[in-house]
Length: 140
Image 1 (cartoon, helix red, strand yellow):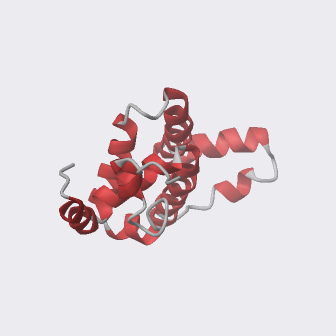
Image 2 (image 1 turned 45 degrees about the horizontal axis):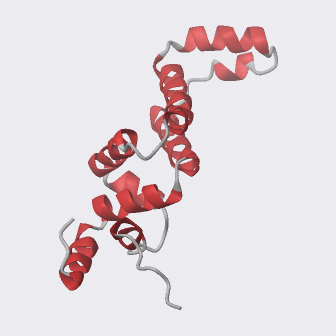
């Protein structure tokens, strides 16, 4: 007995070697990265709870980055007296944004792998998707 044919979305998702973009893909293509995140945010197949688990930690990190260091240092100093003085050391903005990027990448694990892989293929590897559609006589 043969297996049922895969859906278009599952076959598109299988065109790439990984289920999510490589961190360098996101770093080298920030516009595509933003489109990728927006595509995931607007995909109706992903529950609001999963979207919240992805977005809320990122918003907290961005808010911490944007907030004045003195406010953050005061809060941390009250919460952990040993860490407070270390926080007052000015951090390089590039390092801050890199950490947010790494968190965004790591949090992709919260979202369904097949959907992440599908959007990854369509946004970062459109030529592969087009070749697949031409071979199979399908239009997405």
